[in-house]
Figure 1 (spheres, one colour):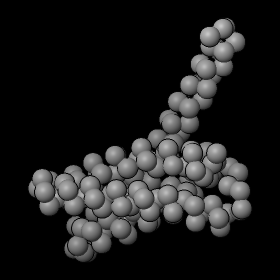
Figure 2 (tube, rainbow, N blue to C red):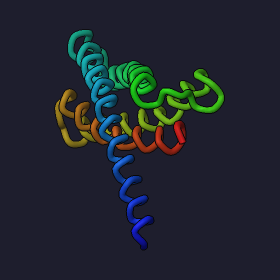
Figure 3 (cartoon, rainbow, N blue to C red):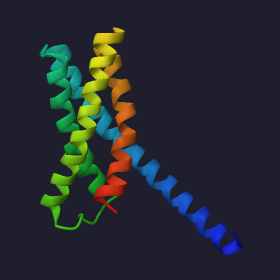
Length: 139
């Protein structure tokens, strides 16, 4: 690899790292939204933790899209805003399935408290959310 190729590779790496940090900020806001709504639905309203997981995930996905659109992805995906939101919810649907599986595993199989399970599941699904948006929504 020559000097120019090394410089380009380093620039690409830093660009990806910058995007990941910015997405961490956006994801952090969405995560706080998800946890707050989960605690509301699970801890205060006393809905089943799976129902609380779905509702909080759907709300947080919208917050993630809105904040991400304002801070990271100013241009809509090809097809306009409606297609963009549908794409976000489609790839987030996979994240939701992962989230539900992790919640079931942590709560029912391991016996972790709902709140701790939710925080852990959110952290793990964050990785999928970043990769799916980067590769499938905002290429």
